[in-house]
Image (cartoon, rainbow, N blue to C red; front, side):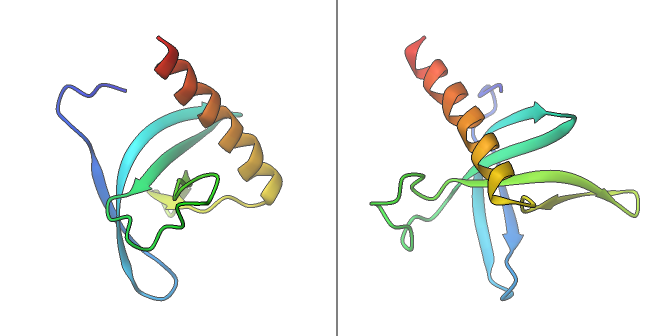
Length: 95
């Protein structure tokens, strides 16, 4: 991911109608699906003791010809993709 133009932010709306601003951290393709990792732009409600410290992983889905972001379907899918993102993020830090 190129940082040439600075960070990329999006706003999503949760199931309660609250808008959440997210900063894009990384994107990866896995099993033909595009996954995106984000951190909340405002960390006031994030539990600092949490292992993922607010990491939000969403996937790109096509619905009625439109690209949408969706939550993952299962805990297994989330765990698998989370581990891929962590491996990639830590690999980038080591370079």
